[in-house]
Length: 551
Ligand SMILES: [Mg+2]
Image (cartoon, rainbow, N blue to C red; front, side, top):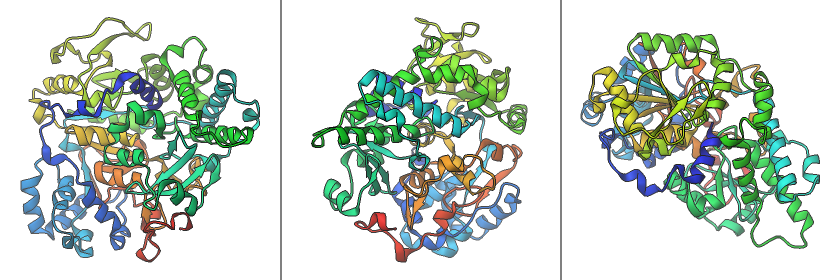
């Protein structure tokens, strides 16, 4: 649960960006660091954006063989640059000159792929990954309880409760500019494509007047350069990135509260307090201390009727997990949710024996800090479903027992424990992680550790017929999650740069046997196909700064 994790990081779950710089034996491959600038070149290569990926059911091996066979120089180069996975072809090449990105070369050579047999260890996020939510019901619940919090605890007008839930305003990936009361949508290089003040769409002239001709805010630009540098401290007091569906309703609550402040004030405040109030509300409703005592109306609603909010995961996913273990993989579940909430949702989605699919289960993991700092593991009372205070375990791999459930902890120690099960050195025990939070689950383990990652983007399901949460994800106001006009969004950039591939759901992946490769013929890794918004980009309508909302 990302929101819980975020509450955690604000309380020190992630200390500072400098803490990510220490080296451990798990960080073995400097060449795994992504070359985002060069991927951006690819994103701008509009001709190639039209290349779709294969479906999961397509005979991917043959296509991959054809692709590599046509580029012997590239293959030789790849051997020296990438010893772990052929997917890194794209990044190994990225340091070369731009002229290498000819259409014919990319069509045949620059594919991304996922081959599970390349990995010894496979990890999973829970919320939004192994389980999905009924986005209609969950969005409404979070929206209602946040508004109630502001009225009951922060003195906002009762009028706030009467305002309608405008689904068109919701979108994953937006940024709140707290002091100004604005909401921003960013391009692949952190320029402001669209923005609102409260719920009112700002004109281009207003955006330029507020943020300058470059259409950039220093804090979101810092996020673009290094998301973890904005995770705590002053930046987090001013800016919020809405990274998953726990976060998206807060944008509308924020906007409507800003509207009310404007309506009730003679002149706009120098600095809006709404974000600080809302941040307190998020901490309140998602705090693990408020799970079992009905203090949080969010948890109260979830506990009363979990089947209203949590979808049952398709049995093919559980079968696939079992097949992975049978093939010798070591699996772990890593969730930001505390054990009591994780047990509630995982039982609803995966069944009462949900823990048995994994070699290790880690709850309250406080991502992204889990990957970057060496916080100790704590023991969990499984019967009482609570973390045991003062049970910090030594930083010794042997202390972690398979089949046990732990709280907090760190990747360095877990990696060593998993490697022991495999009788391998940690540096040779290769790990893959599946997750829906692009910063916590994809960027951080890939950029700062030696993971590969698969991004889950439910937005890809919007192209399917009968997708039930289209209204929650579709937004005429903000445009596509992936691109507006010819301009890819920040999230297309991060996904292309740091994810091995991007899939709509675990169910899609579970249709692939553990030994089968998934190959994308687009260089950006979107499967089963490139989002249509990226396909439709073309240079003649490209936004180059200053005309953003007109696209
Ligand atoms: Mg998640």
